[in-house]
Image (cartoon, rainbow, N blue to C red; front, top):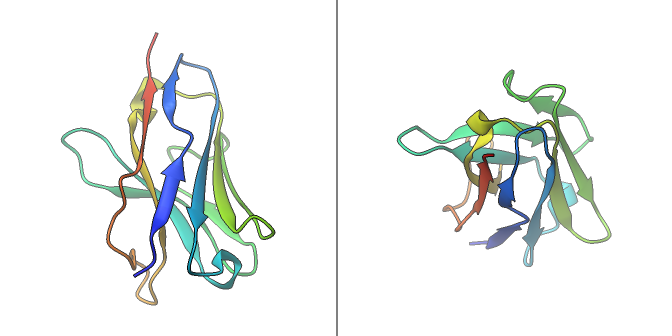
Length: 118
């Protein structure tokens, strides 16, 4: 069981930006499809963005044009650049490897809290 460590969250004002990081220790992230998810209080956990092995990316409609998922192979890290943040983006953000069936593969880590508030 790989342990993915998310970081980079915090409190930001509406319109601000944050960059989240997802680091792995036991797997080579560039070899797998990876995704960022988020879970707001009282809501289910939903996928925000995916990045495939070939670099193809896709996004939830709610974040298109504002969020960018990327990876640094040398650092074995996946990022989520979040711009033009809105209060509705407030959630705990998690990363995970995408399973062959399309869902998350590993047990969830601690995630990183993002709070958008003035």
